[in-house]
Amino acid sequence: MDLCAVADALLEPNIPQAVPTGLSIELPSGYEAQIRPRSGLALKHAISVPNSPGTIDPGYRGELKVILINLGRQPYQIAKGDRIAQMVIAKYEAVEVVEGELSDTARGAGGFGSSGR
Image (cartoon, rainbow, N blue to C red):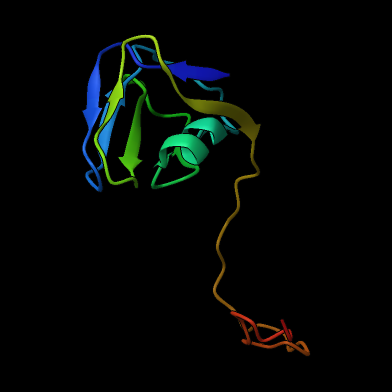
């Protein structure tokens, strides 16, 4: 679903800002809300969600605010009612972390390009 701003906001370049949406939600256990950037804002105005996807856990009860950042060179004006982000509700599996030994693989600890490309 789209999330809209409930107040005007001026996004100065490279300064993150929490923009209020006026929404509060109560998620059931085992679900999270993911906040994602809007592709049009990203492409046309370099506006993004710096912690994308932002996660809202089932214990949170406050107002949803979207952290936005202007990666462009000029200030960007958000107007009340503008669509500023998207929210996806997703199921997740809770895990229990257990200390132990890892098995060997051909790749091992190689990362960041170690697979050949």
